[in-house]
Length: 52
Image 1: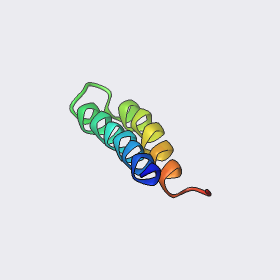
Image 2: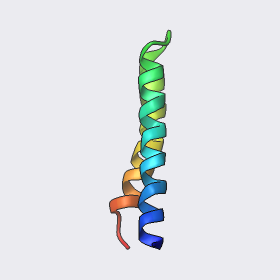
Image 3: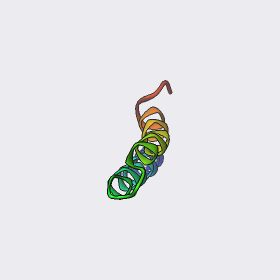
C-alpha cells in the first residue's frame, strides 16, 4: 500500500509539471515555462524511479 501511494504522489508531481508545460506553451514566454515545467517533471521521475 505504501508503494502505491508513493507512485501516486510521483505521478501527481509529474502530471503537475506536464500541466505547467501545456499551459506555458500558450503563454507569452513559452521557453521560460518549459524550463520551469522541467523541475517538477524531473523531481517526480526521480522519486518514482530513483534509487530506493
